[in-house]
Structure formats: C-alpha cells, structure tokens
Image (cartoon, rainbow, N blue to C red):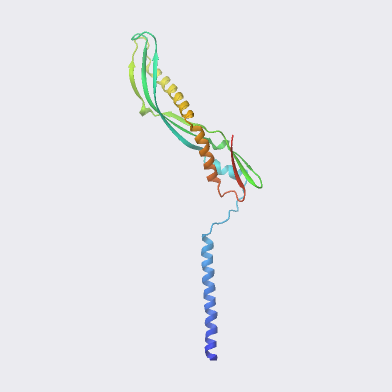
Length: 196
C-alpha cells in the first residue's frame, strides 16, 4: 500500500500543476480580449481635437423641385420676354465643428453646439428644363436671365427648405451624433450637450 500512496502523491501534484497552468493560460487569453480601460486624460483639448477631425457635421439633406417664372418687359414681341424654369435644388444642413465649445470639469463634460446652418445649396444643372420661352426683339439677354433666374430660384428653394424644418432636424441630428461620438470616451464624467 505504501507504494500506491507514493505513486498517487506525485500524480496528484503533477495534475494540480497542469490544471493551474491551464487555468492561468485561459485567464490570460480572456484578459487579452476584455476591453481595456482608457488611461487617456479627458481635457477640453482632447475632446476638441476628436471633434475637429470631423470638420463639418452635415446631418440633414433636403431636395426641392420647383417652378420659377421670369417675365420682363411690357410690350409683347418687342420688349417682353420670359420663360418658365423647372429645377431641382439640393441642400445640406449641419454644424461647423470648429464653432463647438467644450468645457470639462471634475464631474461632467459640457459640449455647446452652434446653431445649425445651410452648409451647401445648389441647383442641379442637369435638372433645369425651360418651358414657355418668349423672345423679345429689343430685350435679348438669355444668359443673364438664366443666371438671375437660378439665383432667385435657389433663394426661394432655400426658404422652403428652412420652413420645412431642415435646420431643426439638423440641430437634433448633430446633438445625437456628438453624443454617440463621445460615448465611452469621457471616463466617469457625465456628457451634457447644449445648443446655442
């Protein structure tokens, strides 16, 4: 019996050693796959730099198709000319990230967003169609008329886009995106996003 006991003791010791090594290896593998705590210091500069990488936060698009009528002059065929123009205008609205203000204290990070604005507005040249063209004998300046019509049509379309709520939607979307961008980057601080 003493021979069996001697055989069991080294076997148990070896088995315990192997189990301990396997458990350490499993713990190491699991530890490598766990998310690491960020040791980056949260300052106004680091948050501003993270936001500045975006440059411009265009959060809403709006497309408007409209009809613009131009009539000039009073005497038909002599001085009166005009046309109707159908066009499609495209708008993008959002915020300029360089205007974002960041304030960091011990318990919270306050991000103040600027008011949303129209970032781009353009009439798609391929969408322009002319109808009801009337030429005048003494009032003949087609290129100038088209340029004036495009500017006036774009101004009118932008007013429609703003009335439809493109800026309000852009402001809400910008706030939501900034929250998502900074989520998990602030340590234990609370994120407060304000709007001008």
